[in-house]
Amino acid sequence: MATRFDPDGLQLPIKLDSTSNGEFEPVPLTQLHHQARDLALLQATQHARRLGTDRRSFMVSMCGAASTLLAFNSAYASVGKTGGFYRLPAEAALDEAAAASALAKKELIVDVQGHFVNPTGAWTKTLPEGARPLSFTQTAGCAAASLPGNLDHLQCLGPDAFIRHIFMDSDTDLAVLSFVPSRRAAEPLTIEEAAATAAIVEKMEGSHRLLLHGRVNPNQEGDLDGMDELAEVHRISAWKTYTQWGPDGKGFYLDDDVGIAMLEKARRLGVRNVAIHKGLPFGPQSYEHSTCADIGRVAKRFPDLNFLIYHSGYVIGKEEGAYDRERSDGIDQLITSVKAAGLGHGSNVYAELGSTWRFLMRNPDAAAHVLGKLMLHLGEENILWGTDSIWYGSPQDQIQAMRSFAISDQFRETYGYPELSDAVKAKIFASNALRVYGLDGEQVSRTVGADGLIRQKQNYLDNPDPQFVTYGPKTRREFLRLKAWGG
Image (cartoon, rainbow, N blue to C red):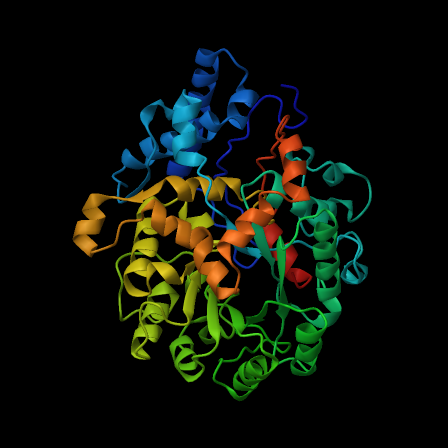
């Protein structure tokens, strides 16, 4: 099979690297992670030779993903990390049907957190001379990355790349386009630009493939007034807010005056989904507003609103274990806040996994604790699938890792965690989000199974060329460069 990307097959289909979404400083890989990658590459080479194929063709196959995950299992188990693991039959590394049995299920996938930027938008005019906020190379799989000029590399993060990575190179059926925190004059993506992309997808006969958030920072002048246009003109499906963000560096609580004003207006306008960035703190300034202390309070006060907790409150760099009611931040505090409000399974609080799952994929024990306690305390119907892509390239590796992930019997017996069954994963992947967004699953399945986008994808899959790359900052230097211009 002729390919244009990575002809030597050096990129693993399950991307284990230090990339962040730009909201937290990248965490370098440990020696264990490097050992896991080296083992995966070695075994891929051996398996490709045994099957009589080149390494790139093997990497693109289902066996390539299975082989990589099995190698990760071996590396993690060698140091006693067995609380979570990727459950695949051993023969999956060499047998396409065995690999597909674990990695190619046909459930709906609804990704509630997607991003891209407008590479030629007004925000680029304010960047300093010579700015190159994200550093790409030719090996990054984006031709624009190596073009001359100041900002051509941002095409890697534009709408065309988004459509390819999300809808062509992954099993995602429906996505929600979200926003980053920024002043209105410096938005890397405006609501008008997002709506234009949604319209492009519609013209491709991709009916209902993209839903839109509307960004609102109630502590920024004019944003509360702007909610009317978002709801009435752009027909958004949810609000997106960042409680740690503020134009003066100071955040807000959802039950502050500005927070309550936003929620009351959301209720009046009839858009009753509120997506809130919690966790992944931007730094020490206004840290308290990044925590979930206010979630239970407002969820109880506004029972007719849905509170979608983006990143589930997860804090990078703090070890995840069993639920600790004394912890004052992170996922544990989200659980505590909900419990203190007298809310439990089936409440109006939903934990979203964007960036959280992607980071936890490299620590299976922590992943088992996070998913286990979210199921145990919030409920399997209150977890939402999100990937925070395009920052991590195609989300297909996140999907495949989740499809095969299991919590060990030992962890389940010790901590009382429910089984992460296929039925539960189907709820996380789609059913929960469909309910939140008021969509009929059977109708969505019929539509996406016969629209123009699926026909284009079927043609593409005759000769696929997936790009196993990530685009977010990978080093502290890249992260600080991004932060310097307000990213």
